[in-house]
Length: 322
Image 1 (cartoon, rainbow, N blue to C red):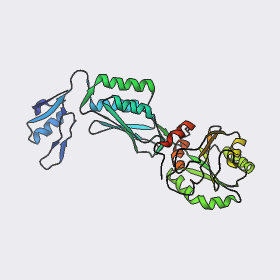
Image 2: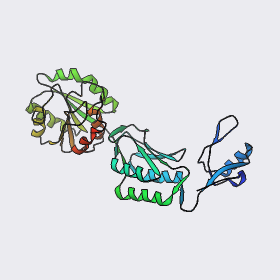
Image 3: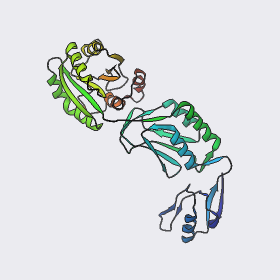
Image 4: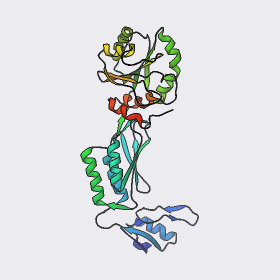
């Protein structure tokens, strides 16, 4: 890339090295802008005789083309790529979604190329219209060989980011107490509805005495509705899968994916799957609207993504929520 000062009349097709301002201080043309024939006329009207520009050399790719190519290759799902000023391309969610990020691949790209990528947190919730990622290149241009290397890695290993759409989200809610399920409803219902509203999710609600057989019967009935997931809001703090909630899950054929999460609040999380429908217990997390492990796992549950025990184990970095 070669920078030089040229006559305005010879500047069409070249890239501005610096921002041009009107005498009033308002921006006329931004740095990195490719000058068009209309821009030449505008610059002459403003009284400019020369401009400082760069010109691409053989083997170079303009910054806008580079970041657009990377943005289109780095993600899949419900996203739209929008070019922004300054050699940047933004990825916008077109639907409510759960953002899934390949952290290892993201680090590899960011450590080895002249294009860097920033994303939302892995497993995070994004509303339609939200920016969930951005790619930025070195100013003006990058070597085609570097761009090709990045695109080759993405082609071999798949996208860095997946915007997994959340459509018709529905959660089944069980209020459970040792003596009376309605007691648990009184404790948890207000906060639970606030949480569902935050994720724009519908819910259907049941009370149950915290007994293994009673819980198992209720869970079987709720599973017939094929919800995105079932949350068990219990007034007790189970010691593990051997307690009544865990035994009820096992009784209905539930595979217990994970007990204990490296998240505070929310260490006593118990997650299992029956016919790919997740059932979640998180004692102490349904009484408060403050962020806890439930807020971390609801987005993938609503997107019907199979959250694994390994992925829950990876929540420890940043898992201290309060």
